[in-house]
Amino acid sequence: MKKIINTVHAPSPIGPYSQAVKVDNILYTSGQIAINPENGLLVLSDIKSETKQVMENIKAILDASEMSFNHIVKATIFISDMNNFAAINEIYGSYFHSDFPARETVQVSRLPKDVNVEISVIAINH
Image (tube, one colour):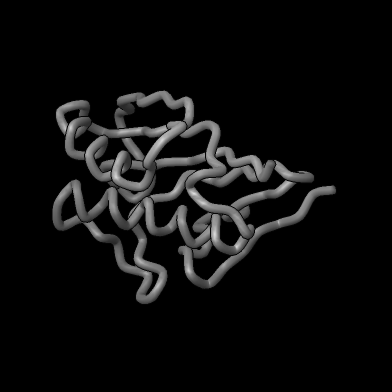
């Protein structure tokens, strides 16, 4: 069964997509960027703050799905500059404690709204 996940605690989609889709016990999130859901503004002051906002947006979607970071099995990180990898990884890693998900990190030439990082995840509720 397919269920659309939508929460006011994460940014509204900026195109024809859902924040996440849950199929049975598997959650697929759309790529999250650093939009503050409270005011709709981008958080671009520095790469760590930007990454933290992205992770908080993911957390809100996980919460709305009755899941947590422990349920994530796969993450995809798109970054505009591989020189930011260490700072992004530091913040990203602080949301996990063990049994880390599989992941790839890819440098791309441009991201929506000219942000520096976009992350999507797949989570499974065992």
